[in-house]
Amino acid sequence: MKDAKIKIKVYGYVQGVFFRYTTRKVARRLGLTGYVKNMPDGTVYIEAEGPEDKLLELLEFSKQGPKHAQVEKVEHEFTLPSNEFRGFDYMFEY
Image 1: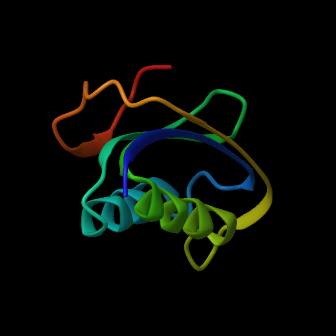
Image 2 (image 1 turned 60 degrees about the vertical axis):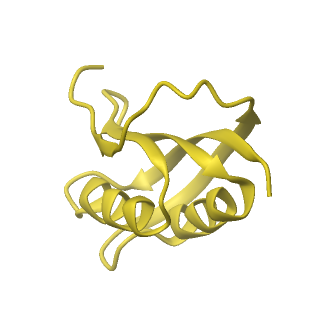
């Protein structure tokens, strides 16, 4: 399976419910690189690289999120990987 990059924006009640923490845990388990961050508009933004099948698993997770999240909508796009990430972590600046 070839590598790709996915950019995901998650809308709803997704901040303050361990969304970033759980996303990082899932992404690391899947062997993906990239980051997750809270956005000023209340969404969560995820950028990840790795095998397409693993990115699809991360996308499916983002449609549900952790236990207390209430996901209303998920937007995503696939692009070519940039190979700029070393691991998967939080990003704090907007």
